[in-house]
Image (cartoon, rainbow, N blue to C red; front, top):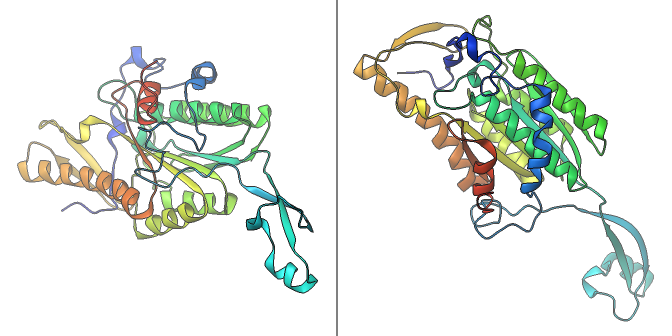
Length: 325
């Protein structure tokens, strides 16, 4: 039986020498910047196409920008009676309304997993590359919509925080940190006890207490009851989107591998040629995916399932009901 909190170090497979500069293995800042023009094909506004996973059929609708209180003033003929402040009206003896204005922008936090569990790909991209591309596409498009953008990029041992700002410099800093974290992933990385997603979500809750758009891009390796509690809380106070990054390898494990699993303290070798261990590994991988997908049903959190086996942008467009482009 595999420990639920164990972590598969599939990224330990060493890339072939010719692949080390391959953008399917690692991305650089130039690659991420080149996605800005292509990002215009996406939309993160409340009004979504009918087939979009963000349109409210599968999860809560995106709420968009909030409202700021501007002033109290006397009621005038034609004012919306729903804007009447009944407490002030009772004290003053005449009707008063609350005047609200739409916020000029909405803060967005894009959270990107670049741990070693993400440094694996069996068909097209490394999962870490798919996550980085999805993060860059989202950040550029949301910034272009006029909203503030920031992010959290986390590796096995570091969490880099960039607070949301309506600033090209902040956006560029986010891309640079993301490219650096992605570029540091390699097959010979030393074994470490990786940062838990729970710790990252605590940082998210501190930076984005409410009324943010939060996009989390991860394979959700090593999650527990506290992770679930944080996801539930963030979804109640913010617009939360989960990008679940997977690879088809987990569904179709070869039967001739020796894998190392770890729970952060102990390690064990698993041979997939053993039918019992092979079945346990498949169940381990599918259970994690099923748990994240279940959050969509229970908490109204939209989940965008992204596979590293396909190009990133067409997948996101399909999930948003935008069709091919």
